[in-house]
Image (tube, rainbow, N blue to C red; front, side, top):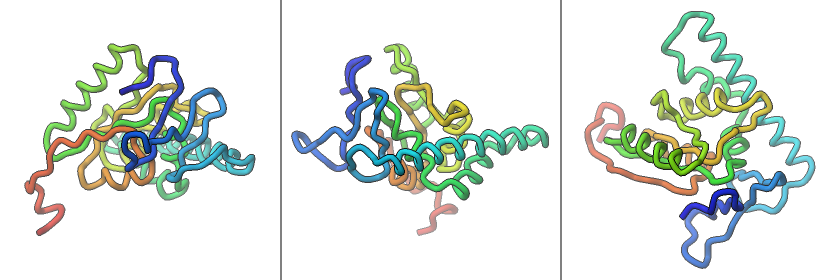
Length: 198
């Protein structure tokens, strides 16, 4: 269940069940940033490093996107993400870890786009501000591009929750970078043998 509107976020430790689940953070202006492991309040140096990651990654992504648009390229959705992924490791964790209600990942061979749109609309109808990769670029670089374009110049995401459509081959990579609060797995079919082989 989602926390009540305006309540404290309770991102859960991946793999934990029932009473073993522990909240990893809260959203009260002093949020702890998820870095792929349970942790207490980060020290001053770690907070500064996370702020620098958010700022550099966001500004880099926005600058690359602007350059792609100036060149008149319409097929450059993943380019900002490619550059940020290379230059600012840990960007996704630094930015998405501050969302009050965490991340929902939707993956599978078929039905991802439709299901993602349905989940986004349900959450929005319930008053949540939802970040999503509406362009359909559903690999790691596409997610980074979407996040950097929708973040403020300081690297803050003005959203309550993120819902991402993810290619089934890239979902584990994104989950490792920014552990989700929820995963909706649809199906996995053997219909892309040209990509993965046997």
